[in-house]
Structures are given as C-alpha cells and as structure tokens.
Amino acid sequence: MSSVDSTSSGGLQPLYLTGFVGELREFVASVGNNTWRENSAEENVKTMKLCEKLLSSLEAV
Image 1 (cartoon, rainbow, N blue to C red):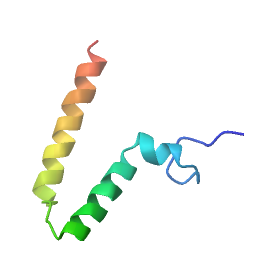
Image 2 (tube, helix red, strand yellow):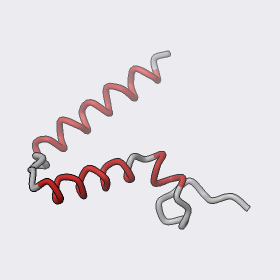
Image 3 (cartoon, rainbow, N blue to C red):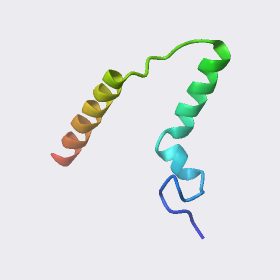
Image 4 (cartoon, rainbow, N blue to C red):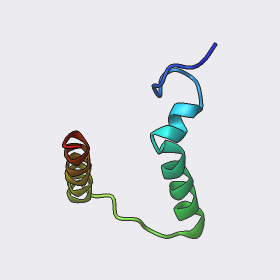
C-alpha cells in the first residue's frame, strides 16, 4: 500500500516532495542559532508570484 500525495495522508514522502521538511529544518536551525529569517506577507507574495511565473512557463512548453 502506498501513501496518497497529500500532507494529510500520514506518509512522509509528501512532506519531502512539497518542501515542508526543508522548511522545518530551516526553522529549527534558526531557533537553535538565534537567527531570524524574514517571513512577511510581502515576502510570501513575492514567492507566490515566482511560483506563478514558473508554472506559466511550464504550461507554455
């Protein structure tokens, strides 16, 4: 039996595929090192715009 590709499936593979494991590692490291990573709404909007550009470029292929 294989897991469904969703974060609610209970499997670990989707967490790696969606990048959540990397984000969690970065968060734990920043807390441990007492460093700050900017995570504002403005930064999130920039990320979403970048994702939209990447997806639209893939659709053009």
